[in-house]
Length: 164
Image 1 (cartoon, rainbow, N blue to C red):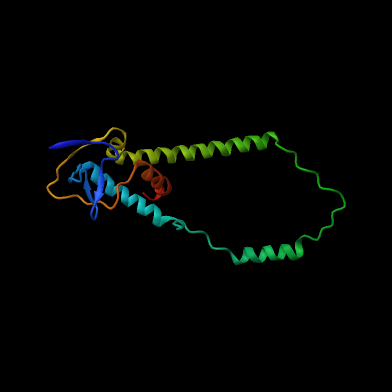
Image 2 (image 1 turned 30 degrees about the vertical axis):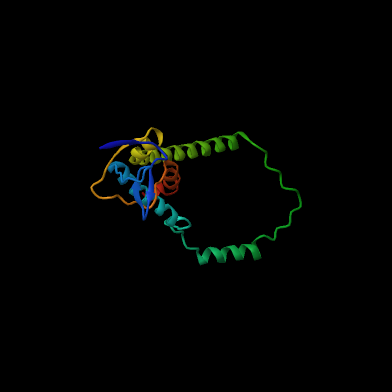
């Protein structure tokens, strides 16, 4: 027997058994699969915070030596006349600023498209939140650690999309 369940009517009882509002066990295969996938993404995002997966280039001892030499010996020229001030907001600066904004736009657009494409893996969760879903009585009770929302999944995905 199938039953239509809307947002807020699902809950986890006991040690995480998925039930309806009457605490009767229910399941929806796609919803459960997506919830488990969402849990992976969210835990990955939590554990990835503060981690550096790209690393950085080591500092060069020779570069350090050159900086010290320049600091100690290189800048002993006395200024007899004032250095002219750089003009503010020249056409070149405006063009450079616009070019950088366009590059940022391209990068953000590509990332947004990648996030949206990935989030299509969670359409059943979205449908449940927006309209509700049909659930059936399971042969075996279904266990979940938490019922994740689309907003939980979106935030986690945005932070780790390059790792997925």
